[in-house]
Image (cartoon, rainbow, N blue to C red; front, side):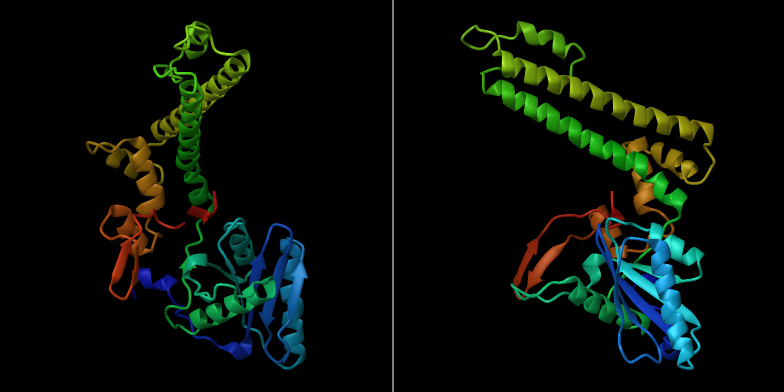
Length: 320
């Protein structure tokens, strides 16, 4: 059995008469749980606050209802789409003896109608159909995400935090330059350590200093920029320290090995190990897109539009 095929369909026989199936439509303020309970004709639908204990009690109550009808529940399976909540709920449910799965949201087929109705109830019906097809072992219904351990999820944070900080640094630099260009100043470098001190000596083409409000705004942006730059350095220093303290622990050895390749630094090596080359990463198409072996085309008939490369879907790449 290929390890890559484990996510595209279930390899466990679906015994619906002795299996309680539930899907969760999750939002920030509430969870809508839909279930299929053996021996119960109705398909229950329950709205709860985002509370894992309340969810567990609801599943056990549905299990007791099935037992009262003479059914024996051997397995409880729950699925929800990857999103803001990430993987913590799946890990928690599995620790309580419930088979939990996280569905790649982009793998669930949706109607192409321009003005189709969209409610949480309809979303749970769509999730349930896709999840049942996956449980039956049929392909192309949906694809499951690999549920990482807490340590694996935490190992991705330094690289992602640094990426966000670098984007923030670029955004601030561009804003400062755009602000100064409006006054005809083009040769100022906000990233210099003494940039703030040079502001008072700046002159416009009319040989006048910057207006006071603009000067104060640029000064605050430069202070924010220095703070972001220092945070980038802190993230890099902390990662380098962890690698030096435990060079043979977990994925550290692979990171250091890749960093020895010319053109690959610690940042790229860390990203490759934790995001792409992980043994539990099973999305071959995403890996191929990331490596540039294939693109993400939008194809219909004779038209083929290349949409560019995409990084491997994780979200977490759930959620960051």
